[in-house]
Image (cartoon, rainbow, N blue to C red; front, side, top):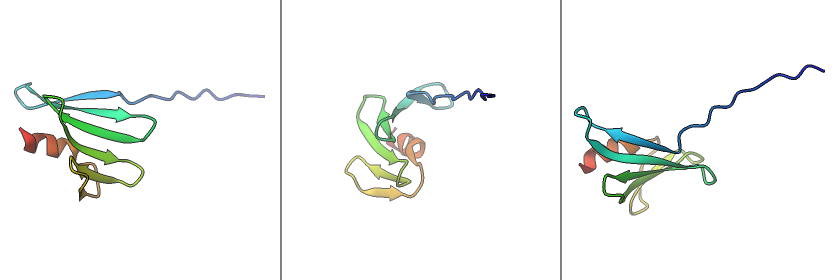
Length: 79
């Protein structure tokens, strides 16, 4: 019985988003249990949430703003 070894690489739980000068714009956090990505500005305030299951991005008020992951774009708009 041959067993194949599978290497699974976890995506980082927290990714820092920086501008061209290296200044922190915000962070994107992965919630593994819910399958959501949460974008927070540099003060920790939630800017938007991307739901991988439904492929939708919602703003901080829960309104759908797109059908793809727009979190980095929304972080830069918030600056």
